Length: 191
Image 1 (cartoon, one colour):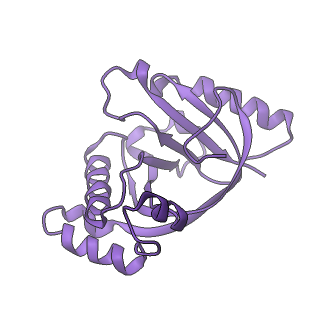
Image 2: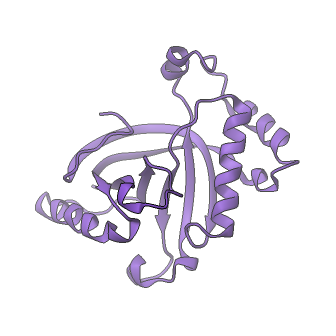
Image 3: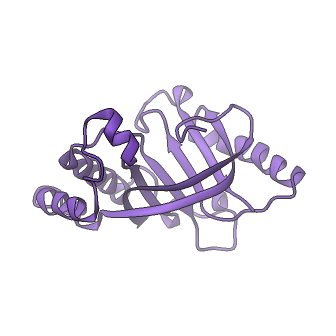
């Protein structure tokens, strides 16, 4: 299954490890810290000469309440841009296979942070979602609870429980004014 594809109804999928650029922070989506972090990720990705990919976010709250009851300025996130796999790099011809190691990322961060101070927080990371329930959500982010409820119903029907951070892949420009056009993969690691 492709990393950037999901059905419009909840499905079970499995994903191995992926590497990319990440920034960890706290604050409202679209807020100042979030915006500076997104800009830093894309600046470092550009300095690497890697192909541009959709922004991703893994989200959590440090609170017993539902995330929807927690003020958005208290949400935590790992923002992420996936680096090409070795096979992707060879096929794309944009980056030599293996050229985007930790040293290349450190050099790009150093180059970029003079003009983009938030780039100092960009790191190369690897994570694994593993087994997930996922679906393609169409429409405004504010309507995600309905899609998440569908995913939760499948999890309950299959006897699955949450096993990791809520993960979103923004296939559309997150700044698109007409949110009815938004397409977001919602992915929840499970066991």
